Length: 289
Image 1 (cartoon, rainbow, N blue to C red):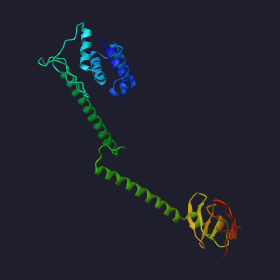
Image 2 (cartoon, rainbow, N blue to C red):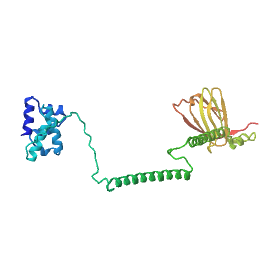
Image 3 (cartoon, rainbow, N blue to C red):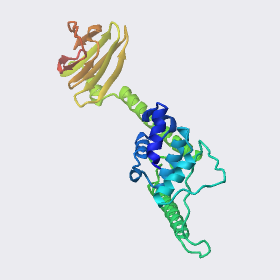
Image 4 (spheres, rainbow, N blue to C red):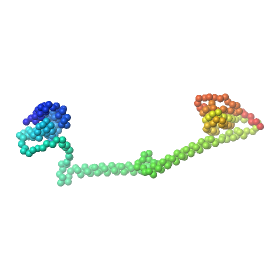
């Protein structure tokens, strides 16, 4: 009996294509075509051939089990043996492969114990490596006496201490800046004091500036040595006077709103578009009794 020819004739009689049969049986078209051509060598083993043959035969309305018997008999060179026992065919059966060891269960030998020992050894190595790494991180953090750049299971107390240290450093830096600003504003150069104490009638070179703001002007006034005489905003109507025996350097943010009187002479107004720097040098001045 030509099993492949029987299957092919049954498919053609039902006017079915290989594509449709493959789609409805969930079997690849190449496998169905190999079965019909009796090309069993291209399939994956004898058990696979029987399974496809039984499913395909039942799908075409044939007796799948009988086709398998015919196939087995043809391969064995014998006629099929009639079996009086009814064979029930089940469809849509899911087969899950199981892998069993070929070893003798009663002998106590085989690869199962060896595989178990290998797995246990690998787990032990991983746990040991993790412990060494954590110990190294902990020791490094203690030696540096600083919080690590990343948290490794840090507790809430550690995070609070780190935050307190950061806040204290910020407060100290802010207080330092405030002290510097106060020192700049209250600093009075010795040269200014000495220049004011001039004997009446004596001629001496000094730099005397009287600054009056007509609006709001930012100023930074320094002497030749870089000592800050004033730094801040001069509001409308306010005035400042500076006297020194050396040059006086001013950085002015809004010169058009500032009236500058240099050694008793009012300088002409200027209207620059940006902040400017002006240097005023000493000139001869006679002190009046």
